[in-house]
Amino acid sequence: MQTELALTDMVIRLGAAVALAAVIGLERQLKNRPAGLRTHMLVALGSAAFLLVGLEILMATAEGDPSARIDPTRIVEGVIGGIGFLGAGSIIQSRGSVHGITTGAAIWIAGAIGVACATGNLILAALVTLLALIIVLVMGLLEREMTDDPRPASDGSSRDEGTRRSPEN
Image (cartoon, rainbow, N blue to C red; front, top):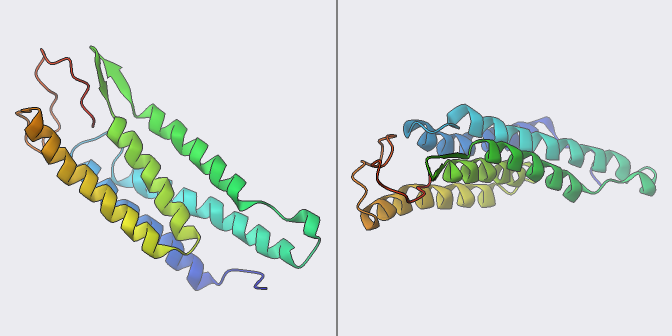
């Protein structure tokens, strides 16, 4: 059994996590959302790094004492919890409206992208990124059309004062 991950594999996995999360982060940045390019990149990088450390420990202990093995799924649970905390911090309630739910979800997705990249599943990470972009861009346009929102797609301004609907950011 392999006892460590090659440096080139680590660089590829971390680089893919950062690059794919940057795509989602850029979309959030261009819409002037609270968590943008750097935040999404850092979340994916951190997620990938935590899981890579866990995989390295798992590989290092594989040939040693079997009781010393770790469960990488516990690392994923910790990453999910930490990202949930960040996402919750991006959600704001004011004047009966809730803002930042989509940004919180995008942060969560950035973490999933990082975990997928760390496991070497770059195809899954790319598909998640593509689907997230479709959801945020295309569904955002459809949502605005269905609710007669006068705001342009790239405008970060808020809805009319009289609106009580809770828009997603």
